[in-house]
Image 1 (cartoon, one colour):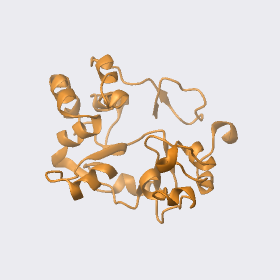
Image 2 (cartoon, helix red, strand yellow):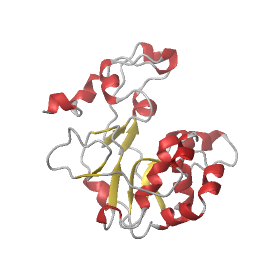
Image 3 (cartoon, helix red, strand yellow):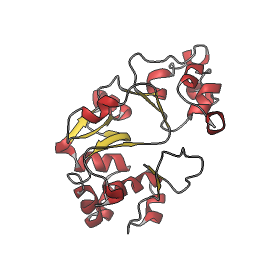
Image 4 (cartoon, one colour):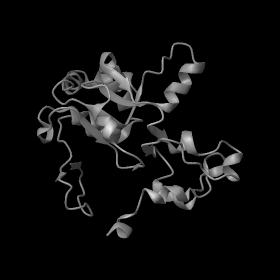
Length: 223
């Protein structure tokens, strides 16, 4: 199932459904640092797409590089999510930070068990927007007692795990991590930009990561 406002280009076996409709103040979302990510709360809406049982959500800006089977059997009925890379690093150096914040690029939830995220947000929308910078902080806090992180090697960040740190990013190509199942592109570069090499200033530029093309193809190439 693909929840989208633009179903063009999807393969025939993919069922396209519209984005969740909620009563939330989406204009207020757009004024917040998290922007449109707050719309992900709508995924916990009761009855959405008639989903049942453990359900795996994937952002579109990812590249699948290995078997997905274990994502469906790991920690049954738990809310499973990436441990956010930046929050994990902050927890090492900043007092009072425990690093228990997920990155919701990839998460598994049980629509019936975790539906209270939606009802809690509906009752506390203003409070949530004032107390949490982005949606994944709010969701992680609300599901704190049911939170389980994916094994680190399964899901990697292109920026955190593949791109060499400055100044080596200017002279060394990004490397493919061992035993990775999914590669996440949060922010820039996007997959096609990473393949060709990305110009993002001294700190964020990368040489071409051509190995990504073994797993990812643009729509016109896949046709």
